[in-house]
Length: 450
Image (cartoon, rainbow, N blue to C red; front, side, top):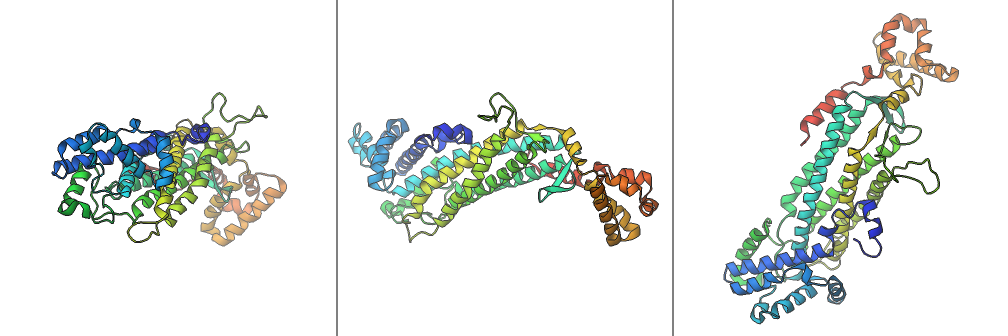
């Protein structure tokens, strides 16, 4: 985040959204929040002197630490918690030598890093949930507006049957609603304390271990798990998989928008603006730049999720390498997902919709899109298979002769004997053949958290 030249791309991909939460400062402050709360919890139980806790907490401020120095020391120590604790001890010792003895009392590096990470993730989830709610509200509003706006339904990228734009949006919204539910469901499992000491027994605290853990969890406003989870990584991997599914849904939405934005389709478009989506060489271009960024996220994220799953296979009470693989993977995954979500919410708020073009495209095949409607109407008298053959032959003739299907059908005496002019006319109105699209939209809207 913001290093090695990446800042040039942060806004493009939305990864600046959680930079302060998931960046180096956020990581450092998360670990320091653990150390301060640990000292306070232990002091409240008489494990360490109250004055020591005050002195330790006073130095648990990220601005007192140099990330570059910690990074250099972490390369030698094997993790950033070790040099952080060393520096914290030195800062405390400079004002209270006795208090410095109690820094990090009874904990281990993984306790510091995992709980610090959970604190970061809690803040990140709040931002993600806000943008999910914003996206859901926007989609709900647009689904209502376009509840009966007809549009070509496409299967295998080909014209299939009429649907409504509201139905397409409701599909996006329904998936977003499930992600909202997943976010809420995973929080009790994810937002918990990690505190087990050297080998997960809290032996250094004697008979005070569980009491300190309980007090520490309360101070950090985290859940207290049944036991430490040093080498059981399903908690963080669950978040990773939910983020992966979310980005998959956002990618689907971006794919749909980019396809609707094609020059030959032109039914919807990303928000316009000065310098937005232009080409370096073609003045007329208006590219789907937001969709491209979201699709880039959808391409990157599956590999990150796979890394987290692979890293679950850890050795005994403390993993060798698997845990380490999470350190950069999970923050990157959450950051990319949050960025893609933020971009998608912005895009949907300003999405430009062209109902007239949607209606025109329904006529692009000269009535062929209504062939099933005619088949079903004839099926009651001719039988489905016979009706299918009859309409299929008419479709072939319309295509070969460059005529509208309705015109070809109107010239067929057998068909007209079964249908009549008025019925035939009704069959070629797309809004008469959208089934229960409206009911589906209403069901989604009724269940939406918005």
